[in-house]
Image (cartoon, rainbow, N blue to C red; front, side, top):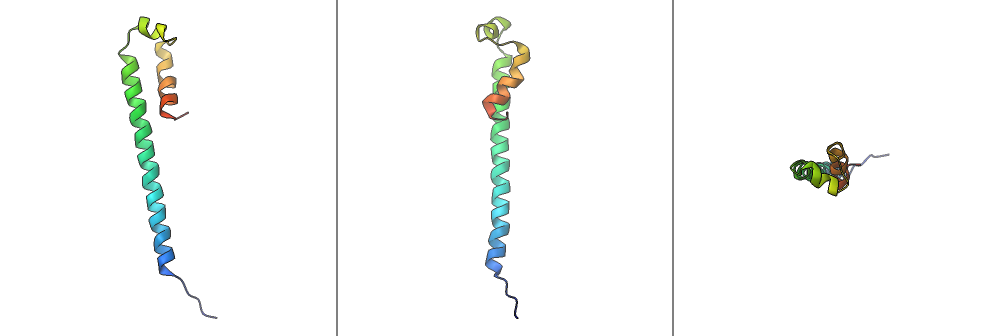
Length: 71
């Protein structure tokens, strides 16, 4: 019995894995950027402005995680 392997399938498999890894990295980078922007924007607000939004300073990281889809 002869064994044959289709090299194109193997190469596509590697390429697909690399593409999935790059997609995951890009998605993580986008989520992280959204997290940082949200943290920065909420951090510059006064305590009174945060209170008007129903937030306290300790809520900022949780709100940023939720906004970035990291929860």
